Every structure is written in C-alpha cells, then in structure tokens.
Image (tube, rainbow, N blue to C red):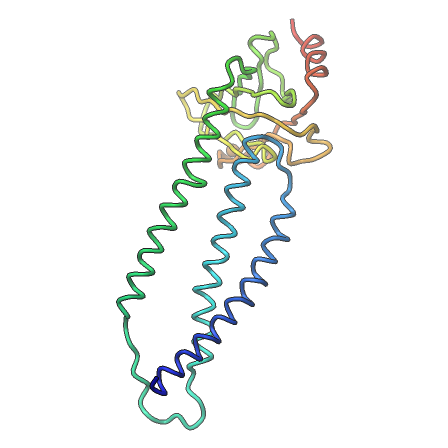
Length: 253
Ligand SMILES: [Cu+2]
C-alpha cells in the first residue's frame, strides 16, 4: 500500500467515527423530538405520523452521512502552516463510487415510493372503502367561518363540530366563495375546499376531547383565504358514541 493510499484509509477510518458519533447525536435528538408529537387523534393521523417518523429517521441519517463527510473533509484535509506548495491533486470523480451512489439514490427513492408512499395511501383508501355507512357531515366553508350539517340526523347549520369517537366520518366539503382548507390538526390529514366542487375527507377520530381541553382539536382553515383567515376556526368536540346519540337527539328537528 502506498503512503498516499494508507493516509486515505486512515482518513476514512476517522470519517466512520464522525458518522457514528453524528448518527448517535442526531438520531437521539430526533427520537426525543418525535416523542413529543402534539397529538395523534385519528386513525389517519397515525398513518401519516408513522410515515413522517420513518422519513425523518431516514432523512436525518442521510444528512449526517453527507454533511458529516463535508465537515470532516474540511478539517481533515485543510491546509496546514507551511503548506506552501500547489494544492494536492484532487480526483474529480471515481466511477465506482458515482455508480454506487446513483444506485443507492434510485433504490432509496423507489423504496420510499412503495413504503410509506403506496402502502400509506392504500391504508387511507382502505378505511374509506371499508366504511359502508359512514356518518356524513356536510361542511360549508366561507369567508370566514365554518358551518356543519348532519343530513341524516336532521341537524343543520351548527357552528361547532361534534363527532363520535371510533366511527369513520365522511366530511363532505363545499365552499360558498373562495378556496379554503379543512383541517383539524389532531386528525393529521386535511383537504382543500374548492369552489364548485364537492370533495370528501374521511376521518376516524380515536381520541376523546374538545377544543377547550386541547386546541389541536379544532377546525382551522389551512389555506390563506383573506383577512379573516387566521381566525377561521370552529370548535370541535369528540365524544363517546352514546354521548353523541344524546347530542343528536337533543339537537335534531
Ligand atoms: Cu383560510
């Protein structure tokens, strides 16, 4: 082994140490951060949270591998006092590595398309297909408020959203004016409400509570729609099926 190659092998050993330390620190911080998820309040939110968790772990690992190499190289191969000669010969590319990294990029992207991409969508659509008789809630968005109707229960135009826990709900989304976006942060997924379109969002709430106990359980417009946009909210209450029945009985005509 030539002296040059020996130096490079040594340098690579140092890089591996940097990678290991970097991965432990960065993934440790990631674990703590992901542990403090605000609230996962629906089956759909769990699916998207799982996908996000997986992708964040992966992104942090790749970031450490690439960023660690750059930072390490800057220090390891820096000019030292007395280095007055011409810069060392730098190889622009090394074909086996270029092919390896190209292959890895393709594999990682294809794997992510399958999981969590296609697998997650399949899970979300599966819930929608399995819900034969979902609870239908008509949602009307307008500048700058939300109104809710329960057509089968004979409840119309209430300004707060009441839903039972553990039941799949078909939110039928309409807007009277511009584009809005129906979003309950605790429920994870959201959907744009488009003029002259009727759109559906399926949610299965899993956590009891209300806007009073946790502001994550609130309807919040999530698409800038004018001056009143930030305040375009509506209170939400997730109750037991029995309590929901009572609420329906007390509010229907
Ligand atoms: Cu808005």
